[in-house]
Length: 252
Ligand SMILES: [Zn+2]
Image (cartoon, rainbow, N blue to C red; front, side, top):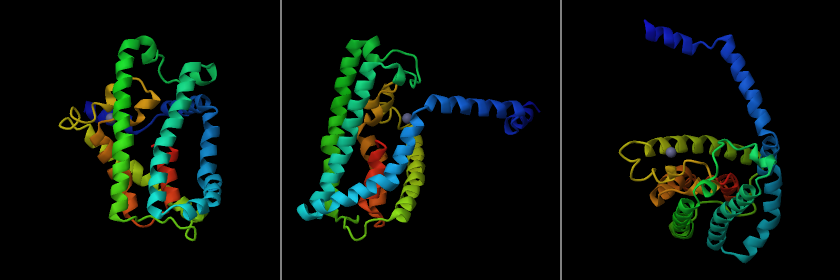
């Protein structure tokens, strides 16, 4: 009797809870503030600015590089370049402590380098070592493996995607990546797997930009790259520009 009453209450939102949701959403948008501007910029970048820019510089790559070299250069430089640049930007934000950025912080806790500098130094060392393995060994080896297996992606200028194709591909990536990320992440939290692999990623109890890719090399390779993203490359449907910019623009 009690449980059925509880479920009825939960499944039928009262006017009061709807009001609460609306109120919370208003606060959420106020908090986001300028974040919405960057969301719009990212949107226009995906569909308008970036395709135009890439189409302009593409002939340079095609004339000076073989498809294999081109694929390798784009894969490595985009992945590590975006990760490095976004972390440098975040480092500046952490150090400057400007009120403009501080209001976006989720937790009030001090940063780990402020609360326990000694421990932070050893954590940082371990993080950089793990990131180096992922960026300088795993990604290049995987990319070379892909080239050896035969490139499936389109690189030519003639079949450069139009707006309709870009929109379709981005929509597909949004759905498929969320699907695979959700199930991959859920699997990694299984008690039989968690202590051996995913525990490393959750060593950080405060979100710092560097920990975005801080994970056990197995998790980085299998869950983050192969299951979530690489299957897209196997399907010979996508143009490298849309795919790479989707996977790298968002810092993935
Ligand atoms: Zn997790």
